[in-house]
Structures are given as C-alpha cells and as structure tokens.
Length: 396
Ligand code: PLP
Image (cartoon, rainbow, N blue to C red; front, side):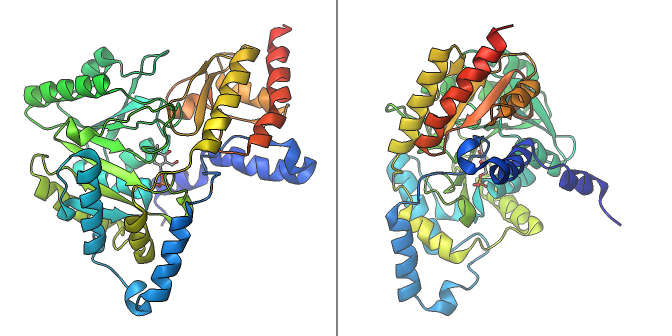
C-alpha cells in the first residue's frame, strides 16, 4: 500500500531539521539566549520594504478574482516577460519569456529540471560540498548522483577528478555558486574551464552535458565579488533561481527555471520542463508571488547584517585557532572539525550549546557548517562557547 522508498524518506528527517528541532526543545529547557543555534539557512534580514508595498498595492489595485486565480501553467506571461527582460539587461544574455517557467522556489526548479533532463540509468554530477537535498532530487528522477569532491583548501572544482567522473551516461552537472554549505564562489576562470571541459566531453560522447546552475544565493556576495552568469559561458545551461534568499522570502515559495535559448533543442527542453512540472504537480506557481517577484526582481538585498556577522565569526574563530574557509557569498561558514569525525565533533559542541551541522550529508567529511543568518548578539554570546570547545580539544 505504501511506496517503500517514500516511506523511508519521510521517516528519515534531514540532519539539519533534526538539529533545528533539538534547538527548539533546548530553548524551552534553558532559555533561548543560552542556545546557539546555527543550523538553518533561514534569512534573518527582513524582505526589502518594496516587497510588502508591492503585495499591498497588488491587493488594493487588482481584480481579486484574477489576482488569486490560476495563471498559465508555466506562469503569468507578463511576469515571464519582465524576468526575461531583466536577465538580458543584467547579464547581457538573450532571454526569451517562453523559456521561463515559474516555480515554488529552487527546490521545485531543481526537481522539475532534473525530471525534464534525466531518467533511470543517467548520471548527474554533484560537486562536493553540496546541498544535501540534491541526492533526493536526483534519485527522484531515477538518475544516479555521482559525487566529485572539490579541491580541499580552495574549494575550486577539481577538474581532473571531474573529467575522470564523466561517462557517456552523464547528463548534467549541478553547479551551486555561491555555495551552500561553504560560501565559496566559482571564479570566471573556473567557469570557463568547466565550460570547455563539458564541451569536450559532450563532443566525445555525442550527447550534451547540461549545467544546472542552482542560484538562490546569486545576490548574496561580499567584498565586491562577481558571480559569473553561466549561460554567458556555456550554451547548454538551465538556471534554477529562487527569491528565497535574495528577497528573504523562503516561506513564500517562489522562483523560476530559465532555459538558455542557446541550449541544444531549447524548445523541446522547455516542453520537457513543462511536462515535468505537470507530472510533479508544479504548475501555476502562486500568482500573487509571481507578480511580486517580477516587480521586485533584482532589488539588491541589504547585506550589512550578514557581512558584519561573517566578519565577526570568521575573524573570531580563526583567531581562536579554528581552520575556516573565508566565505565570499551566501551566509554559511565552513569550519574544519577538531577531530576527523564531524558528527562526534558536533555532539561535543552541543555540550557548549553550540548547534552546528556536520558536513557528511554535504558530501565531505571532517567539517561543520555554521549558518550565520542569525542575530549579531547570538554570535557575540556564542564566542565563549566556541573558545571553550577549542580548549576542550586542545587540553588533551
Ligand atoms: N539550493 C540550495 C543550494 C539551497 O541552499 C536551498 C535552500 O536552502 C535550495 C536550493 C532550496 O531553496 P528554495 O527555498 O528556493 O526551495
């Protein structure tokens, strides 16, 4: 009666969710100010004021029946037109509204794109560290995830390892820059190298290998870092975009898929995206949110608070002796655990009420992710706990 694979998936919650739930219980026991929960990537800055203003204006001005009614399955035509114009204006890449599909965030964008491109027997490359749900999304379309670790210290793509991992069954590589969990941003040079490797391998095997660019953190970058727009470098690209982090709207579930017009058989790929959306039940993304997203698309987030947190955490932890990778984007710090077993390290951190996420589910071992989308005060209060944890290891 019950699908065994879905039962198993439903019963096993993600490590991040487990820690988040533990934090909730612990807050009740010892008080919120004594629990240092760094588990969840939930934006801590409010949506820009223009978001609420736009929603209020739409509710006041639009015909309510049309406003709350179904849109076309791939989304409202005017919304798709606006987003296409913005893509062209911002990135200098030709964009066509008929190749844009509105979704309920990056998770839906990825699931739909993977289902459109892959089937049983295909392989999808995940560059580790990666967002843990990729494994679930890839497996859902019947394909097999193939993990390729990035270079350990720089987190750049390990091109030799990637070349060795590509086979005639490789259909796609998921690229997530700025990266969750490390905050790393791939340089233009790396994107160019990736593009030329994939062009070479596509020609060798006679089948295009697609880059799926998962971009919910595109606007979250520091120190003037540029995030190359992959369709400008590689024809066979699908962009999975989300407003969850850029506009602080994760609960509203809105994003889109953009199929590059330069992609081989772009029209058919988009038709397959529509088919996948239909088969998964991801049609007509929330209409009020579609209109709001289009009106606010490109509004820059105020990153002052994240940047302040990033600096305080990175500088304080490295000064204490921790080995951390300086994040260029997103709101995560990737720190080397003080023992090889990251899960054991996180258990020991819990004794100091520090709730960190072990890196194993991100596809690498020996690190922890610290989500610094929290209040500055929480970081300040947590520093003695990080120090005590460090000393706990170093007295041995
Ligand atoms: N991809 C990455 C890398 C993420 O970090 C997340 C969420 O944290 C998602 C996709 C899913 O985002 P959304 O809320 O838009 O579904």
